[in-house]
Amino acid sequence: MSPSQYEPSAIQQGRITFRRRKAVRSVLLAALSTAIVGTLLGVLVTGAPGWDRVRQSFFDPRIAREWLPEILEGLWLNLRMLVFCALAALALGLLIAVLRTLRGPVFFPVRALATLYTYSFRGLPLIIVIYLMAFGIPGLRLEGTPSVTVLGGAAIVITYGAYLAEVFRAGIESVHPSQIAAARSLGLSYRQSMRFVVLPQAVRRVAPPLLNDTVALQKDVGLISLAGPIDAIRMAQIGVAQTANFTPYVVAGVLFVLLALPLIAVTDWVTLRAARRQNAGT
Amino acid sequence: MVLSCTDVRKTFGSHVVLDGLTLDVGEHEVVALIGASGSGKSTLLRCVNLLAEIDDGVIRLDGEDITDPRVDPDSVRQKIGLVFQSYNLFPHMTVLDNITLAPVRVHKRPAAEARDQAMEWLNRVGLADKAGSYPDNLSGGQQQRVAIVRALVNSPRLLLLDEVTSALDPELVGEVLTMIRELKGEGMTMVLATHEMGFARQVADRVAFLDKGRVLEQGPPSQVLGDPVEPRTRQFLARIIEAGRL
Image (cartoon, rainbow over all chains, first blue to last red; front, side, top):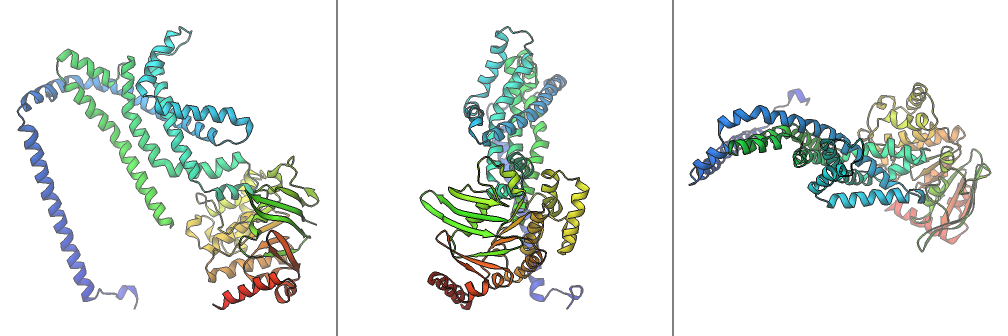
């Protein structure tokens, strides 16, 4: 019988009807339980004894409207920092990861330094790195010292570079040695094997964790406010000081979440695609 | 002699894999290496291709000592093709890119010329329609034929085949063996490690039985496979026949 003539049997039709009914019931159940949980949470928060005070000092719409443009202006600095720091940290991480794979006695110091770097900067709190860079380096009074914004950005790049280097290294090590053997057997040099065979596969495999670290980085760029530059958080802080109201912090928080959403969505999509491809391969 | 291995020794820790192995391969000759798992067949091929460093002895390619540490291994490997049991195609590249990678990057040939040559080969082996496919979408037999083409486009002096049909479903073995038979017809010098005794008999000029890291017995297929002198060769073949019957 050709597929065009196929009609589901009575048994199969019964199954289809049953499954459809079950699906409808699941959706209704999900909607109901969401409504219950939502109502309970709402009652819990708004029914709290201090809710009115909290609403006034954290969710004042007038103050939010007033400070939104200024905080947005600060966010523009965060956004630029994010793009620059993410790209620079990815490049640095990749470089360090590749340096750590180099073999041969000549490269021992390079390897040792790269290892020392990833060990120390993964342990060192970002805030301390920012303080050291932004206040320590200008203290040297060298000529041509860059601004604190650049120094703060450099602190973020150095710290995140150490994390990303380890992610890249995990990716490089996950490529099966037989791939290198195949590349070398064709006469490719070690460098060519890395560049054309190992790294493309490694980067594809670790794309989800790399993007996840970039999401973490996007909120940590806010920490440069500690060094002085007026970003969204510092601007919100000024707002809080002037209005004696915490609403500007909430505004800044919401803006950071909105800024992260596209990146998070891309990460989820890439992760899903990678998982699907992995399953298709086996 | 295209290839000449003399007293080759290779150890992994305290485990001696090749124990003073000696083997010569002449021009246009096809030598089949047979022997139990762990007898050193694959290790020998990896040593010849300098993927593994030998611990003693000499391996010569066209008379040149390629195991001399002053020799550039990349230039040696450019003259020796190696095909793996599990194909080892690059999964992130199309079939065509897999084949043209070495011609373009190593031999610095123009991309268009390398592509034409690759397509010619793919046409010959009936895989031209797969040029744009990724290895994942090919059957094992197709992948292995691509892997052989990938080794051949470098015009190697010597082709090493490491159990190239062991990972294949039985009905796919034939297409790969046909290709190797054709290569023999064209005069390609080959060393192949194999479990396919029937194939060794058909295609090999000489069969070498490896045992405990040495060539215990070698000669024409009819003699080594049909009327072996050494008791251990007889034992090995008896086990193969028994397994075939089960």
